[in-house]
Amino acid sequence: MGRFRKTINEIRSKSFPEIKGKILLIIIPFPIPGGSVHWPLPRLKLLALTTKCRKLDDMVLRGIIAHELSHLSAFEKWGYKKFWKFYRKATKKEVIKHEKDTDKLTIKKGYGKEVIATKKKAKELLEGTRWEKYLDNYLTEEEVKKYIKKLEK
Image (spheres, rainbow, N blue to C red):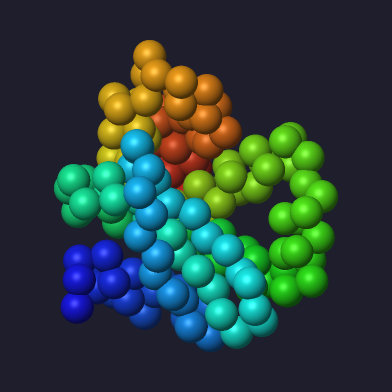
């Protein structure tokens, strides 16, 4: 079993029992590390990771995978029809809110340190590139630390 699949299975079994059905892993060539999820059929989910994820350390990879599984967890609660409505009709503002809520769910699921590591790596890799603008779609490292402290109270 490859590193990606092993990590997905470990995180899913430990923290995401609510995700039903199969998750197919897809590796896509892309110039930066990252992931995404899609739900094409009611019992089939796709989790895509870019080829650049192979170069990431385990902490950052776990952060990306936990974030993507958090998306699937939220979608599972919404249901298949609401997922497709969101996918087709969400505004940029709604997508950004969903990404930030997904970061928060990832932290609630116990992956705060991994989210911080992912934020640091993303900032390092994306600053000064055409991809930098996408950093604004997620919680900042400072917002993550603040949210972790809030949950610890």
